[in-house]
Amino acid sequence: MPKAVVAGASGVVGNAVVERLLERGRYEVVALSRRTPEIDATGKFTHLPVDLTDAAATRAALAREPGVTHLVFAALTEQPGLISGWSDRDQMELNLSLFRHTLDPLVEAGSLRHVTLMQGTKAYGSHLKPIPVPARERAPRDGHENFYWLQEDHLLAELSGRGIGWTILRPQLVVGRSWGVAMNLPPVLGAYAALRTEEGEPFSFPGGVPYVTEAADARLVAEAIEWAGNSPLAVNERFNLTNGDVFEWRHLWPAIAATLGVEVGPDVSLSVADYLADKEGAWQRIVERERLRPTTLPELCGEAHHLADYIFAHGAVDAPPPGFSSRIKINQAGFTSSYDTEETFCHWIRDLIGRRVIPGPSREAL
Image (cartoon, rainbow, N blue to C red; front, side, top):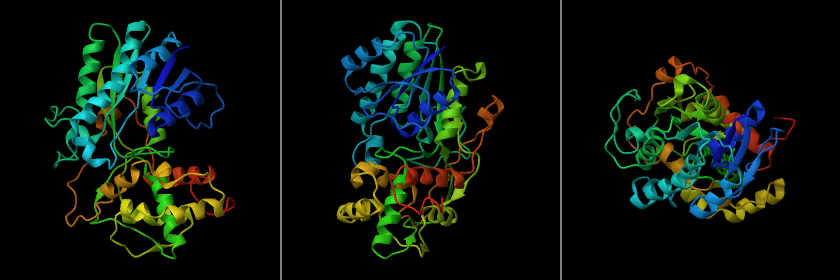
């Protein structure tokens, strides 16, 4: 049986990958993360609680797991405030080091057959400037600095001539279960809705100018990762990945509100990050009253409240440039699964409510 190491296993992508591989029962699974991933699947997996910034500790942990055939690298570190770190050279080098500390020992061990590496639409410079519509994988590498390029160059150099395949996936706005992570919106939406209700205010959209965008369900990404590790058509290829539809936040907002059991109100112009900054006391009252898991707002949100401001276009007067990525290449290679983005958000919000991470309607209403 093949053996997969999932690095960043408690993150939004890694958690979904561990779940997917356990459900399918076709791999031995080793979860590499500081926190234990929260998994519903009944299959057994090995958890290695390792800080990937520690090269010696990572190497020692991986040495205890011989025979690894697949690496899924979904680990990520971000700076406080999130956005500025995307252009910070030290942050890029740090993310490169996490990858090197994981990949290099597995390559040296000699059993590795395939590596899946995560990127995103920032590969096309979408966070810095307008990009072609749609973005296509065949485009020349964009000239901006990004840890994607550092990791990709190391991947290609390390695997050269060794007969180990690789696949790079570029999903957009991944939505999943994990909380306390850099970029996952459902926990932030749950906290924002609960606090607005606590203050007697409706669940108002806090963003700026309307615009249309895309997302990717973590379950879809996990399915694509499993496919990539087994399909000859995915070997040494880069693929965009989205749910397959598009959405606008204001049109999505009523479904999110209904799932959370709150009322939609008129738009308000506010920074979600600023709004949550002084609400710890109110949040703890909600946690106690609703018998939620004992989390602080920073523990719940990670850095994703800053992502909320960015992705909601807070303060924007003009619509952000279109950031659509083509799915044609991955579809033609044989991966055709898709998800309804409205259901993606509702599913993961229901999941967090059921885990008592965020409040919501009664269980009967779910």
